[in-house]
Length: 127
Image 1 (cartoon, helix red, strand yellow):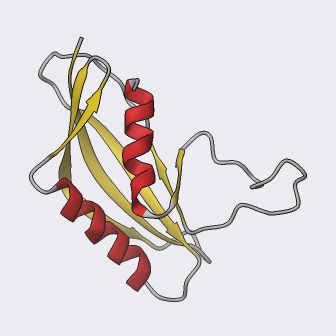
Image 2 (spheres, helix red, strand yellow; image 1 turned 180 degrees about the vertical axis):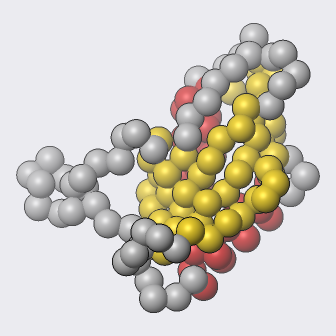
Image 3 (cartoon, rainbow, N blue to C red; image 1 turned 30 degrees about the horizontal axis):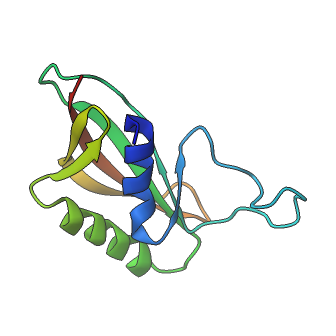
C-alpha cells in the first residue's frame, strides 16, 4: 500500500466518507443526482521519508446536525484509536500518527455545518 493509500485507509476507518481536502466531490454519483453532504471527514495529505521530523496535518470532521454530540464522539473515537500513536504499515515501512496540540478544536463559523478540527502529526519511518 502506498503512503497515500495507507493514510486514506486510516481516515476511512471511522464510519465516515473520507476525502483529501482538495478532492471533495460535489456529488456522490456520476449522474449528479445525489449531492455530497456531511457527515464526512476531510484531511490534509502530507508525505515525507524518514528524517525524524513529523509532518503536521489537519483533519476536519463535518456534520449538519444541530448537536455537537456526533462529531465530538467521532473525534473521541479517532483519539482512542491513535492512543499514544497509531502505526500504519505501508510499502516502504510505516507511518506513525500522533495527536497534535491542541488535538481538537470546534469551529463554529461554518454555519449550518458543525466542524471539529483535529491536529495530527505523521512521522514517516519509510524509504
